[in-house]
Length: 486
Image (tube, rainbow, N blue to C red; front, side, top):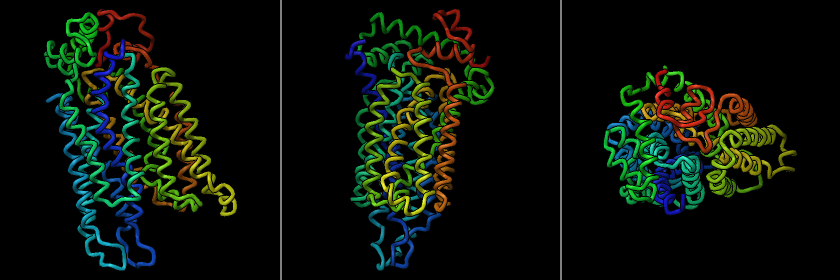
């Protein structure tokens, strides 16, 4: 496939990832913002208590979970395209509320702190709105990206979301320490605004149009995505395969109950839940949400804000490498290498916080070096590959329910981890060692349970999940054997 045929669906994918960038900004905002909300030294006045700060950091994840199922239902009823367009509105509302909170925030002590009772509800409302947008973006975006990408580069397209998430985190890490809440919110709002301007021109998913019986519209959408003529043989062949896959399940439309009952879907769900659990329990979301605070607690000679920026920069560079590697090295090798690298670097981070002050002074560089290694390892595998696999392993008829379920699970777990894991700050070494142990367990999970999907069609992936062996050739007869309720 030449570049002229690759470019259109990559452009559509890049437009969708602007919503993921907004989600990353939502997560990264907490790291530079929360230290400003702490009690001022010597002022004697507490802006927000640690418990209130943890709610500000974590509440977006709870709203994310609540929005996942409604977003999936909307995507199946109205289409992937309009559902994604609507997801931009909560992000814009979130940054508007954050900017308003910044304008109302009082000056530092010893000045009057009376505005804080107003600022806290605004910040919490902003986090709820942003979390709802993230829930819709994660749920519908994964569906859209998995359905518009060609088989040979589907993994690379699927990893674009991680690159965008990291870009959003980097934006907050770079600007947050040096500008006020209102300017930071204005810069963050640029991503959802640009998404609205660009994605309005993108086509609907051909899979969705076929599900609705609109074959001609699906052909036109596929031709636009592939940069080819609608009457070309390549478009017709791919459309025919899509149509067979959709038609084989049109009479047995499945929902959440079928997702949990069918053996094939159970295997796919086990794979995705296991991968996302490993990624969450690696502590990545804790590191991003509390990066500045972690470096402050390390008492390293390195500036905490500069260290946080370094983390964001490394994530960006590694995300680019990951996009190219996932369809070359394969999913399984990247995941196992990622788990091993995360385990080793987190163990080293825990050892630093366990050591005495004298030992810490000798290795003052270790907190930054270990977390840099952790983020490189995480981004190359655990941060990018689960999203690609999620878009591949579920049948079209249960994909909406599956992505919503995984999105809700991911968000609820993130909420619990961000809300409670940083409470015992005096035992950070135990927290990092626990994260390291979970990553070690992830190596065995990938080895025994995760299938390789590199270079395979969605039909082949589903066949292998259901039957437990590799599909040697594609035929209409074999397609009918792949039942989501078997």
